[in-house]
Image (cartoon, rainbow, N blue to C red; front, side, top):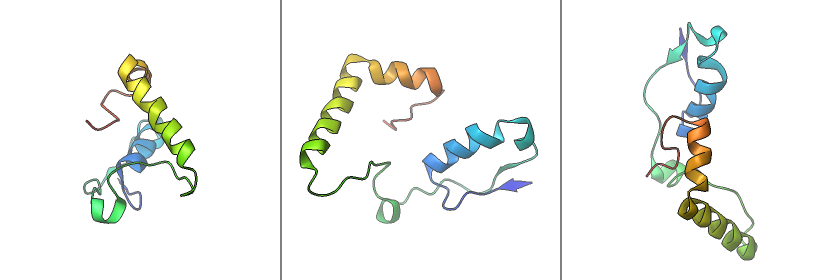
Length: 89
């Protein structure tokens, strides 16, 4: 059987794989086609939605993520839950 998420982006692919395909009920299913990765349509990657006027919040989020990457926190969390580089670098 074929399992298709619409659109099949990397984040929806991870959710489908971890939440269904890697379970006993998901064994007879598999993905069809490739991951959709068109920056012109989907943008450059995963994002957090903010209002344009929330510039202070954006700076805080950017700083927190950068600090987590710099001190290794991000990598420790990533390795606990994923077996690949979810950041995409």
